[in-house]
Amino acid sequence: MQTIRLTMAQAILKYLDNQYINVDGLEHKFVKGVFGIFGHGNVTGMGEALENDRGSLTYYQGKNEQGMANAAIAYAKQKNRLEIFACTSSIGPGALNMVTAAGTATVNRIPVLLLPGDIFACRQPDPVLQQIENPSDYTISANDAFKPVSKYWDRILRPEQLMTALTNAMRVLTDPVDTGAVTLALPQDVQSEAYDYPADFFRKRIHYVERATPNKETIYRAVELIRGKKKPLIIAGGGVHYSLANEQLKAFIEAFHIPVAETQAGKSAISWDHPLNVGAIGVTGSLAGNLLAKEADLIIGIGTRLADFPTASKTAFQNPDVDFLSINVSKYDAYKMDAKMIVADAKEALAALAEELKEAGYRSGYEANDIETLKKQWDEEVDRLYSAERPDGLAQTRVLGEINRLIDEKDIIIAAAGSMPGDLQRLWRSKEPKTYHMEYGFSCMGYEVCGALGVKMAEPDKEVYALVGDGSYLMLHSELVTSIQEGFKINIVLLDNNGYQCIHNLQRGQGSDGFGNEFRYRSEETGRLTGDYVQIDFAGHARSQGAVAYTVRTLEELYSAMEDAKKQKISTLIDIKVLPGTCTTGYETWWRLGVAEVSESEKVKMAYSQMQNKIQTARVL
Image (cartoon, rainbow, N blue to C red; front, side, top):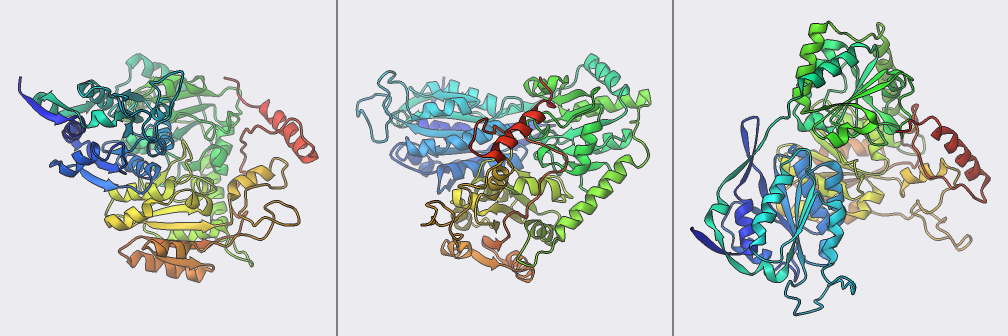
């Protein structure tokens, strides 16, 4: 047997460089490169291997471990999970910085390979710098924190164990059902230990992803269910994008006159101006989508896990005769809301359903103009919010409307947390698929700027705009520097409203007078953060890192900044001062919260009573 003598770290790179994925006969190089920040736990192992590797993997230097992993997640999401990055870190804090990103990847079903350094397997320099010691279990290290947020976890204590570990890693990373974060903990001494690996281990490997076809009996049962329903509503999730089923979905809704609402992950699957696209659904939904959901007698979920936001904490569907039909490659997700299941690829399932429904002569029973009237009313509401005038400053909805109008319909926006997800899901008008990139499975603050880098790396010929609040920007903006260093131009559109205003609004809606959510100075009078707003020059901050930056307080300044930013070759930041409390809310929806049952505040007591009353209307499943 022919062998190749390599360190374990060198073997990882050689193996990753020869992995390919094949979908619909099209082959993609699966691993594109490695993000990394070096420390004593990986610099002489993975660092040496990356420095002297002669393969095709590109190394990118991160500035924060969570930030670089967020960029890797955004890249894979934008590429429909057909290409990924690995991320390497040192031990201890460097590794733990990636735990949040691991959760983000796993919740969103996005593949990312994490390679954190670990303590010495030999245990001789013990305890090593940054080691966490557990006196009751000495096998535990900081990297055990990855276990609950990873779809596959392993610690490589001997170099030959790598062969089994990498095989399992690829199994998970290329599986549309079970994908997410894969963590391989790499003790720093084992990274540098050599082994005679079989040469065959490094051959080109093609991982074939075959579309799961639906069972015929399952399709027949689904058709019978649909035929008995007059007012079905489709909820399009991220699986529509990952299945590349956009055209099939469009043909399906047109053939049977079924309206479609979108989750955050599913948005842009159908153009906003399609007559049957009724917009967002649930807590951050449109009035049209939520009114149709209340009356629907059948909810058809496609590639969605029906979390609490699309279902409005299980209160969105009020028809006593409503049933649920779920199309999903994951039985775990398809089973939710006690749904009838089609466990299959969305593209294949829609084609099979369409064939049988056409033969049965099915068409929904919506009255003439039912859908069209609701859509028209909602479009008018968006127009109103997009043109909102305020004498004292810029309304957030007006700013978003102007940006929506000013950028090209093929440009990509990215967001994740704060008030942006609600406003964007409701209001943003997406024409082209994959131009709306929202991380809302985990709603990870700090994803936006780092994610914009990943999206730009995936779509280098398009303008990418990170829409981010001041709170989220302050959380994590590290990869702005990386974007400048690597020449990947991103545009950060920062809406500064002086704090965590989304949660501030949520807090006040449940009886609070507002506490701890605005960026204010501590008042000598109250002893709390109730003084004047803290003024932050975000444009100046961005310039100090090498970006081109603008400060905006008027519409004229916004127009000028947006146009000039398009001409720039390096990353830009537009610091827009917007009025607090000018985001959207409501629209026939509700979100369940844990309101205090006992309080000194009468308003909180009233909010608790109202919450309990609403809980009674939720479906118990």
